[in-house]
Image (cartoon, rainbow, N blue to C red; front, side, top):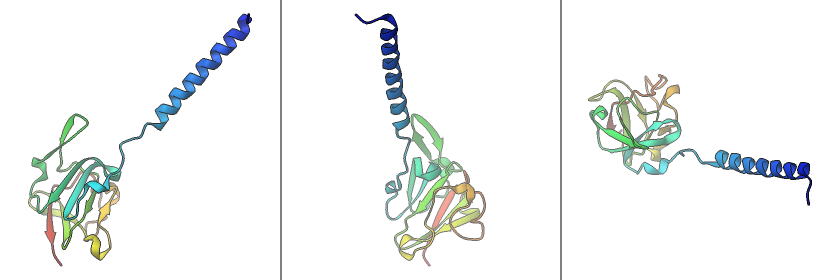
Length: 151
C-alpha cells in the first residue's frame, strides 16, 4: 500500500501532465490563416484583416461602391467598403486602381498585373499600399471602389 505523501505526489504529477497537455493543445490551435488562393486570376481582392485573413471579397470588373456590399465572417456581417486591411490585384491583362471614395474618386493606389511584375498585393494597408502618388498613405479601412485600366 502506498503512503499518503506518495499518493498525493503522484496525483499532483498527473494533474500537472494533464494541464501541460491542455496548454499545448491551446497553443497549437491554428489561427485564421492567410489565403491568397481565394483571389482568382482577373480579380482584385480585399480581406478584412491584415495578411489576407477573412472576410474576403473578390471583384471581377469595376465596383463603383463597395459600401453597398457586405461580407460575412464568423457569424457577423460587415460592409466591404472602408473595411479592408489587405488586398491583391490579379489582373490578367490590366492593372487596377483602388480608390478611397465611391465612383472612383479621391485618393487611390495601383497594383500592376502579376505578369509584368512589380507590386500586385499588400498584406498591411496601414503602412501604405501598391504604388502611385498616394500609395504611401495609411490605406487601412479606406478602399471604397476600384477601376481596371490597361496600359
